[in-house]
Length: 513
Image (cartoon, rainbow, N blue to C red; front, side, top):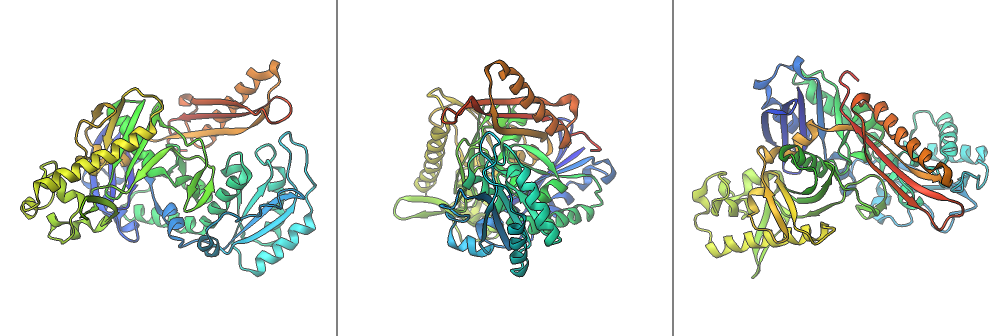
């Protein structure tokens, strides 16, 4: 038995899954401290299991991305870049919003080091230079450091050596390495690493809080967090790489939609309480974003799904001015107090769904007075906005099959333009938590290889094997691991036969890992 939990902006969902069967579900209101909502949601499942029977708990959480968006709970962080005499034109934090940079201190250091794409050294590391950096960050009370070296995906040697020097001078310093977090592209990889470093202290606190919330229910099973690519990471990994959870909510919904509908290639529309997320599935996994991803105004390039989000959900506020406007603001987890059907004074999309007979929530008599024209206008507005987003996701003019999930999906009527079929699977309101419960473990390789024509197959096979090895090291059952993606991109602007190779493997969680 697995428990899957998804913490959303409005609701915290929990499901109990055994194999491919959903045994019990519970929806609780998300609380300001989050862990209380998790305790309530898991408590709603307690009638269906004994704590000792639970073999794993999987959680998808918005804790970390919310912390960055709101600029709260972030540690004082230093960015150390190894690349002198190169890279001085664009220093660290060059493209950051001022408010976010101030929230983490904005301490930047340029040092000698770095490699060319083929492994040649730009300049040797200068240990005295790094010791001076260590003394300065210690004086400034910095607790976390992001180390980025030019082309560290080719050679991570300088990043690791720099970390040894810094931690020897500043014991207890938390280190984030760019070669472990980002992809090709120095500034974007550095930005992703800085964000990760700024979240490290918060990650320790949240990890401890999640363990406490499960211990309160008598559950002693291993705890895993959902990653952006639809796979799992254990709690110790999450303490080091909190940035990998940023888009786990939409990803879980997509994986849950594939699991519930039995469809591996489709669009998934997840209508929650606050937002609607639309993504594409290929081989049962989310299509990844091919370009940089902007997080709170900062360009990054770590693994993220290609998801379009719009401020449209069950809690969205409805206004007439004079045309109908739905969202983007939402009453969120206050829906049960502020919506008309619950005796509140705010007209929400949920009220419209109840008035239209699409949902049976709260007291329907409280929305009988709503004008029929208004109700139909709101539903048309919702349908048009979702159709526009689906159209932007498509890669061909052919009509798309769509899987509809999420508690707010009652707002979406059949007949979306450009959609061949709509599937509303059983338990669709809990797809996000189910996606967490059935998630697998993954491993990925993404770096530049020299592709001599006679050795191309050997290089690709090596990349595949490395991806498999990483999946097994992360906790996958070796007998279930398979390659789900292999991509080769020749880099014509570099001398020699250089190609960027991405290989991705996934497998089932090895219980007892």
